[in-house]
Image (tube, rainbow, N blue to C red; front, side, top):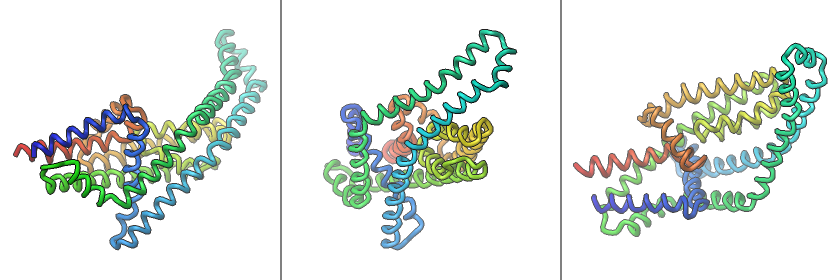
Length: 332
């Protein structure tokens, strides 16, 4: 038991080092394992092997189609709504009502508000331009990473049992292989349960955003429903990623009422996520305190960025399972 525990700790240290020595490769392979588990979520509904394989294939194709749809829709949507924002700002600056309001304000405040609105369009445009330049400068690396992610997730799905059996015998010599395989099986069950519950929460958030957008007649309702569901896998930050373009489109569709409606929709989905679904599903089912989850997400995000936020809870599950199997039970 002590030898197995030492081997595991050694490999954990090596993995931590690889995150900084080979940052893209190690992160992509980690995300490939998570993606493979995500693709497997629908298979939990079936018992026959053929049905489970078909469900996994359909899930993988569906995720690919959704990703292509999001990417192909995002660029023209952002460009058109930045233009709409600029036109609306110009109309506000030229309106007599706005000029009368400025006349009632102190000169310094009126000048500040006028200059802010005058420069807002340039600020938003410069942000979009910088974002486009960042995408173009990193497109080769991102495409390589995406290809590696797809290949890695498919490989994990097809060969996971063989990989586990081979690696245990090769990487853990003179260890208790039966106990180690039991640990891997229980950890896999914990992670699959987390991915399933996270998917359930993401679906609720996506449906809430989609229905809210449809009721308010905000453009791109389906786009934001899918974007909200996918970015929900990044705890506490996904809503910001969805919210920025959502507010732009809400403003272009309905003006200030659209912005207000988008904020209400995001607040409702955030309450459902953070105060209803996450405590009910994540905390109770995973038997983990919500405050511990929040601290872990923030700490890993500070340490490893968005990638750290995605893997924070899986890391917590690993630590809990390792402690239970190799520290508490090991000492007994």
